[in-house]
Amino acid sequence: MGRRAKKAPVQTKKRVTLAKRFKCPFCANEDVVECAMKLREGTGSLNCRICDASFQMPIHHLHEPIDVFSEWLDACEAAEKGNSGAGVAGNAEDDGDLLARGLGGAGGGGAQKQDAYASLGLADSDDESDD
Image (cartoon, rainbow, N blue to C red; front, side, top):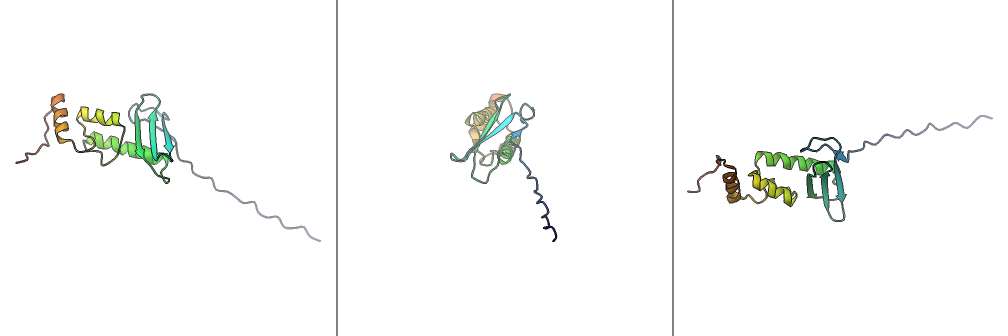
């Protein structure tokens, strides 16, 4: 009588885990931005523990924390270039800061942009006449 053959052990693949803490784009500290995903409310929010920078966006069941962080970086780049944000909803406080600095914000805001440039003492070089 022979022995029963043993089954080869099943090797499980390691799952790649996505980060939930990120580097802050404002204060440049590592692992200080934490993401809170509220699926029932449909919002994802990021908060920096050091400089209190925050961002919030609408999410659905397929979003991951890295997606919210990527949208925040895109919104920061858009604000830096002076674009209107391309429909990305940020913090109301952040939108006010962007308008105050003349970097654009939601809704186009041509008159607000001109006022912001004037308050900073800058000339609006890309202003075209409406004649």
